[in-house]
Image 1: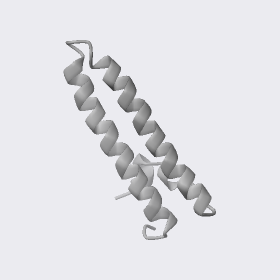
Image 2 (image 1 turned 180 degrees about the vertical axis):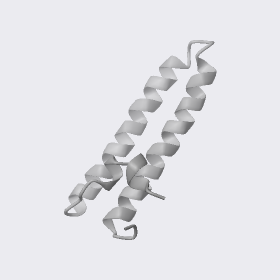
Image 3 (image 1 turned 90 degrees about the horizontal axis):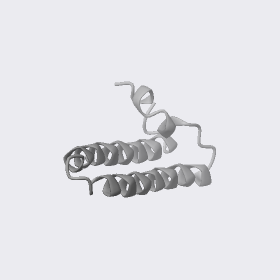
Image 4 (image 1 turned 135 degrees about the vertical axis):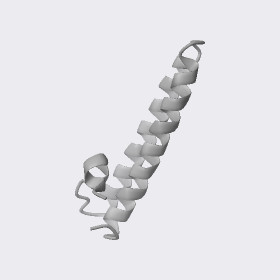
Length: 78
C-alpha cells in the first residue's frame, strides 16, 4: 500500500534526528489542538456524538502518522 499518498507529512525528508523529533512533536501538538477544539465542540448536545467520532479518527490518523514518520526515518519503509 502506498502510505505516502495518505500520510504526506510523515514522509517528508528528515536529514537528522532533530528533524525527526520535530516531525513527531508537530504530530503531538496537532493531536492536542484537535483534541481541545473537538472537546469544546462536544459541549454542543447535537454535535457531541459527531465530534467524538471525528476525534477518534483524527487521533488514530495522527498516531499512525507519527509511527510512519519514525519508521521512515529509520529506513524501515521504502
